[in-house]
Image (cartoon, rainbow, N blue to C red; front, side, top):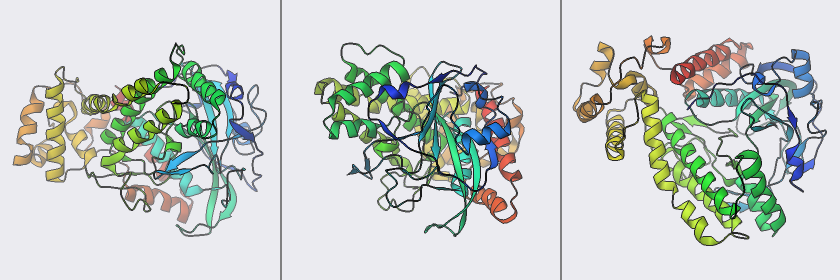
Length: 464
């Protein structure tokens, strides 16, 4: 589930330029200050940028001096999308752009994209900026998700810019920053929707070929639309399952926020739900609970259906529908596999048996109010290691699960130092706010550094 980055040579690319009209050349904002607050020295070597000095890092990711061999001018990407299921043709990269492309240690085509880098033709009434708090929150989201095995973009850089921003939904003025994320593509379902809405079959075919040959690295075949649909369904069903097992709520699962590679990205009003609460929402403006914890698979499936509608321009309907109909079973399989993975036990060969284990665990968690992180921490390996844990699960709510999990228990699954602690690593809203308060009130970044270290230690234990 967790892929360890490896050092690689710097191999720039410009593949995105093979997509005509995919974006507009833009100029980055000029900021009064550049204070380097975070550089991802875990992932920078994977794209050959680990040896950059801090000065060079700031020049490239604060002032946006072009990297050698890749894009000479940033591109604000064009796309449409359904936002809370209302179609919007007036969107695109409004406060970010594609800055560079390169190959990583696995020979994947990777993008460096920005957030808070200034206004673009799609900014509408926005200032094109990012709050420092928003950048800190994205670091915490991506680090925690990576540690829990979710296929996510990586927060690559965060630089404070010295500007004061006015915001309606948080105390203002507030500090500003510019963020760079490392992603396996910024092509979204909304990119395909825009091409379809414009009736641009050539662009739609080019996007499909780009996704298959450059991102999935497979042959297009005789029916490229259907092949892409099947791959996207597989990746996004797994993404939805990974959110559930992580206890994560993205908050805004609009079709323009679904990457064609199935990689999670773009973190705004995210939350980790403490308990298995299907109605838990992350966005204060999600009044109908459309993207609630328990509805994320439904939301992602619906978004993928919009890709199918877009591909109908040059693909027969039947294979697209057949691909879409695979989603529920693939999601159930991925949920079982990831649930067992986080428990540190082999996935059950019998699907019905595995489903029963998961169902009983969820039922007991809901009935007993045990937090998600605590459950997976205490039951690592399929058995309870301490007397305190045994007392926590002594009630009748856990009797059936205890019986079921006994046959799957695996000694040695919790030998890493992380599991020897008393409490699980979590990322609940009070912890996030405390980390931000230290920065806002005292300019104290040590709680953030400590949290990232703790999360990475947990991730290493899971990977082992």
